[in-house]
Amino acid sequence: MKKPGLTTRLAKKAGVSRAEAADRLDHVVTRIISNLKKGESAALPGLGTFTPGPRWDFAFDRKSGKGTGRRGKR
Image 1 (cartoon, rainbow, N blue to C red):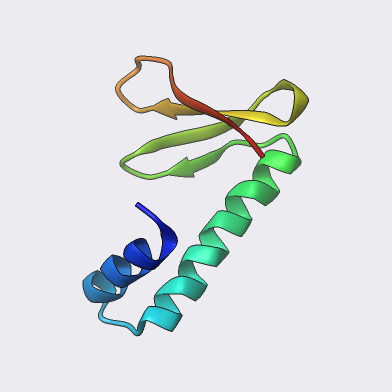
Image 2 (tube, one colour; image 1 turned 180 degrees about the vertical axis):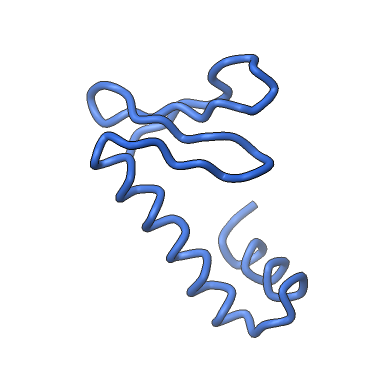
């Protein structure tokens, strides 16, 4: 899902404008990136946790205990 689709969905669920939903999404993403840059994990309740890795990589650990789900560069 791309950002416009996600912000539209978030706006409907939260009962806010698409602009407000986009601002909130930007804030969440900024916090995740900030935590990873500091070497800290960033949790998404109900989904899993982003954990920092070597060489600007990160891992997304799902709560199911299956280990890393996705890897990507920052």
